[in-house]
Image 1: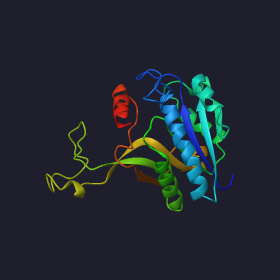
Image 2: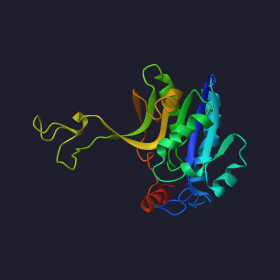
Image 3: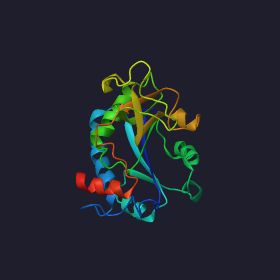
Image 4: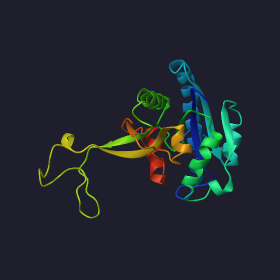
Length: 229
């Protein structure tokens, strides 16, 4: 649909590293990461209506978690789709990517995760505006953490700089390096439907402010989040 933006969230039941990661209680949030993220989306919904007056927005969740479905059922502005069994296993990302253009109607699709609890409504707005502003030059974008450090791989090859030229340059003079922090991906619809990917051929890294790029993957991350909250 013309000028429709889809914001998509995949939420899978269970977690191998952290039990019930998506809905386990965190501080005063009974539904944990899910509740924190929906609170962001409530504010984002209002912000987008004010700032992106030429666009309509849809929020889409795909989940096989009954607890998640029950929690989301009270929000009539969120479209909830049942995540099929073949899309809920391990190593099924390509299949899930193929599902997205079938359940998201937007001209532009933003894929996000509830496991980025500090990536708030202002971060979303900044990312979306950044992508739309550069839409003629890029077909996709990702939330990035800037790596301003000396980097070497397991083969003892330096990635951050050429040590033959200078052994220890200033960190601000190092090669620009970006880490995908998984908070959000943005793409034109054809990237999903034609390339079967979340990122296309011309990709824009959008820097996430420090600390707000926290990705909950391990129990230690939950402990960090509790302290930050």
